[in-house]
Image 1 (tube, helix red, strand yellow):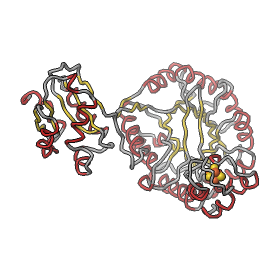
Image 2: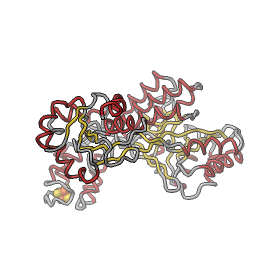
Image 3: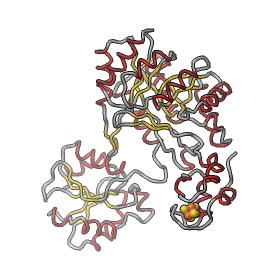
Image 4: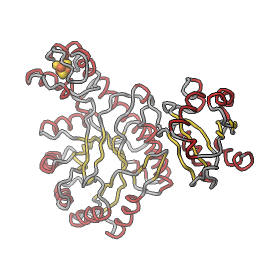
Length: 446
Ligand code: SF4
């Protein structure tokens, strides 16, 4: 049972030394009870208190990290059911599955294409996280050859899929110093699989088709000393997958039920049809998978999943921002137009992409509006004439441009009079309300 903040406080040194970053031990205790800090942040907890606090300090969903040669995929450590309550922390890893019945050339071609895929979304590079190798051939050598083929084409983390411990050994034999996910352990093979996971410092996937059986099995495996578990409760269609995912998240967070406090692995690829797979993967991203294994890779099918994942795992209280500054679009000359906007990344990219896509050279002055869009920032007093004028001076706009003309977003036409006063000698023009209309405006009016 989780301890309350006051119960935790009684076990802390109570010296208020502040080394944990909090002004008092009580403040730290409250954060620890809310699972927002680590017990290790306090260097003075006695060993006796540590063991008492261990249960309370452990995250309700264990953080599991798959490591490869320099890259890793993490899942777990989530503390809320709904993103708006706080934030989700570790985006589910998206893994592309290959099968050992495919030839080495086929595997390498598939893996190379997916490995090279990277797409820029509002300033962030998005990509998939790793690959799953499934044993279906019934041949241990074919399995290890398939793992080798994947490793020749990618260095991203791996999921090895076989229920046969001997096959798993064969797959592990070609990996050196990595921590893949071994998928997996069931009621028949769990002891041998647990030994392999321990020997190789690997995470272990645990497979059962009911929550009760799953909880029993994770408990047994944890008692054997394997702590990094990933659970598969079954449920390959929409309703059961959603039900299991929600029940597991609720039991972990609300009841602190440790036997199910692990990341979930989901297999949308088992749907057998690419469209269904995408929809199941989207559901898994939102509720509540930690690792997602897909069978079909195309840029068109993966891009929406990567963007959805990025949006769901962005802190809703912290808008994605770009750096304020003076940006050049299409190599502008000093006389080219000067546009102004806020540093909300979607606003920035909407404006920049429209102008850049039209092949028009322009300067784009991005002001610090604390990551808000134009209208929101204006309403909050974060995008006004004073701030725009300050940005013009701070980023030495007058030294780089000669037009002495600023184009305001149409939504804040009301600022033009004040801006004229703030920037004497400058011409203030009111641009269109929507970014999509900017190219025509620039061509016709400037
Ligand atoms: S570091 Fe430990 S002893 Fe010091 S204030 Fe924080 S909780 Fe208290």
